[in-house]
Length: 308
Image (tube, rainbow, N blue to C red; front, side):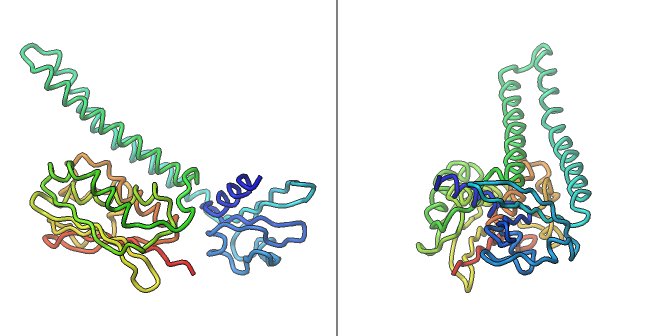
């Protein structure tokens, strides 16, 4: 029962919707993080303002009553006008982008198979290239599904404070060989007691995507440093490289899905790594930003708020 109750609270807490649970006297039993941030007057143990239930302030309540343990409770979802239209537009654009991104490796795969049927071709070499294209397709599909799970709330991002530095060290160790092949030296530094309210698995996702981004794009003979420190009211996870960098105009768009700078368009990346980083960090209540410039390397900073 206690485990079920904890699961229920976590599902509500991490929901990307503004959702509130009310008792039969309209007192707030539980509320999602988004509801607490977006709605005035939402506090556990206190009555929900009547104005919210009347739909004032531009948010429409959807009320779902149920009975548990002989008590009547209500689950209330608050949506803004235009939410559905915006979601449909986003879904349509995302579907089109995924289709476009899949066409390139599929076209290369088809070309390789056609070449393998011609006389005099090096079939084993073509088969090996075809395997690489299949790996690229698999990676893209895996990351699309992972991002969909994040958005649907299937993946729980945070459960409690976790030390960040051990995760950075583990990720750097796992990527040592990949970094060496790319000519990038990985370094790890930071404070042992710096923590973030994220599951170790999710911390690993963030660190790995940031490190792989540096490995892919910094260029040979460069360094990439993964670090974590407390700064003011936040814990800051940084990945800094001294590579070729990107244009200033590209910095604001690095976290968009499938966005690639001109230099990286021919790479084997899916274009989803930094989008996943932003989504995971945002789901944990944090923010991300990029800094740097052409010829000045790239720095990605993830800010996690310190909890009182």
